[in-house]
Amino acid sequence: MKKPQLWYKKLYLGLILIFLYVPIVVMIIQSFNAGKSRAKWEGFSFRWYGELFQDRSIMQALQVTILVAVIAAVVATILGTLAAIGIYSMKKRPQALMMTITNIPMTMPDIVTGISLMLLFLFTKVERGFVTMVMAHITFNTPYVILSVMPKLKQMNKHSYEAALDLGASPTYALTHVIIPEVRQGIITGAMLSFTLSLDDFTISYFTTSPMVQNLSTLIYSKARIGIDPTLNALSALMFVALLVLLIIVNRRTAESKA
Amino acid sequence: MYNVSLPWWAWVMMGVGLAVFVGFIILSVRRNHGVKRSLFASPYTLWMIIFTVVPCILVAYYAFTDANGAFTLDNFRHFWDSNHAKNELYATMGDEYAGYITRGTVNVDTLVYSLWMAFLCTVICLLLGYPAALFMADRNMKIGATIVVLFIIPMWMNFLLRTIAWMSLLEDNGLINSFLRLLGFEGVQLMYNSSAVLLGMVYNFLPFMVFPIYTSLSKLDPKLGEAAQDLGCNEWRTFTRVTAPLSLPGVISGITMVFMPSVTTFFIPRILGGGNTMMFGDLIESKFLTEGNWNVGSALSMIMMILILLSLGILRKADPEGEGGGIA
Image (cartoon, rainbow over all chains, first blue to last red; front, side, top):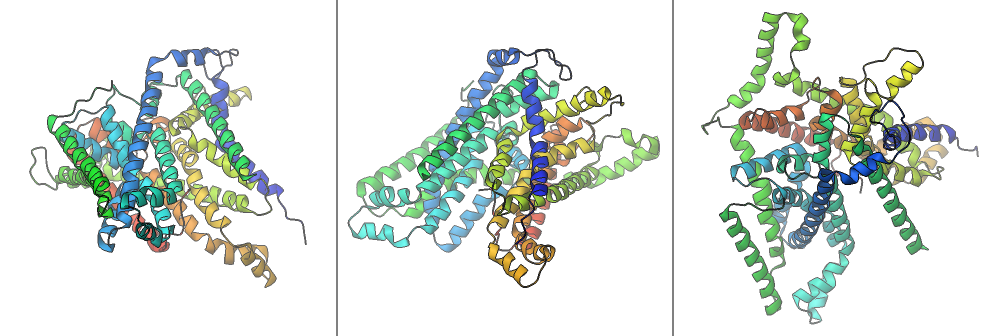
């Protein structure tokens, strides 16, 4: 058998990866540039990192982003898990209807979701801000929780719940001790998915909050319209490193648990 | 900052909803029997009615009414008529000034431009992404799994930051131009045109094309390819007759995942295109936030929704079982 040719495949993948990473690498290098100019290297410094931590608007936006993501993920997970169990035990017709409603926010483009929610808040004269942003995030997160929990429910043995009841468990006990543990993996996936979706969301937040309460994405947007702010380079570099560290830790852990 | 200013009835509604739900849970715990499990979906149902169904109805309501709330189709007519307005402008100003008329005033043009840009972006992503997915899924490629992770990492970074990163490369004083000048060439204008927007879109959406294709390719049974080769197919025919058709669900799901966000993006054209490349998403945003014209804005949103549903319908037909799967 002839030896498989791999070099051109590796070369191609390498080129694509360079395309994906060049802007990130450039940004990280520039975050250490002492000057404000992007074309000229004016010496190594941590100046922008210092300014980043002194920038109150960025720190506040970071706080808002994390708070919104945590609250939205927790509420969406509870709401979504209960809903998945409920929808699963429904009859065929209402089940199909509920799944259609669940699919609406997922097929709708973000901008339409954002605008329709904005219209709702404007129409009901609810002042946009932190609470409305949380509500919007819960709305687009919950369907993802349902879609992560649903397949686990379908995989579950249908009779284990009934068996638990036959053996004298109350419905509540059967729920918390039979159903929930079985679908735990789906719940965790759903929670993590909502958390990351919330962290990354720009469009929907943009329409459902006021300029007074900004998350990182909307803040970056308003800063980018004025021109590049070198503190944003420092922010990206830090986020990238944080991600990398997180990924390595997760990888180590899974590798350990496998071993 | 976190002060909550909801109208009184919103508090009452939330209170009642919460009380009913808590009461229902307490009751089910106390009685220890027979609460129908399908009732578990009721808080979610209520939530979705308030935050999804009602907002959709509101969009439709504004789309079909005028500023006074009377029924009208003018908002949709405005969409078609804007081309007429453009032609009139051309007639008075002459064609040589056509470039000075911003696209945003011409809605049909904007829509066609957005669809064209999204189409180009999808094609480029497919051409770049398919080989990447194919090579990553290659069983002889030991580092395939590592490369998958390397593809995911940039996706986790905030997409606004990633797009802004391109600015510092493409600007007039940016890295590419400085490099060109260093070599003695003239600088070129790289930003604020369609190509820059396209580059930004491809950069952001390429992984959405690669992952579904990679998933469907790596699920393929390698024995199929071996069988084809045993039966006398060369590598190219094995690919065109066996591998490619079987990866079609992944391709379709990739196309959906790239095309949809491409049509509706409004951040990328804003940043990389300046004001010169208004896309449909920008147009809707500016109708609402700059002009404050909810009626026309809603009509445009509805047109966009219908287009999306149509294209989803077509793609579903091509992949009826929805086998493509997503990233997860």
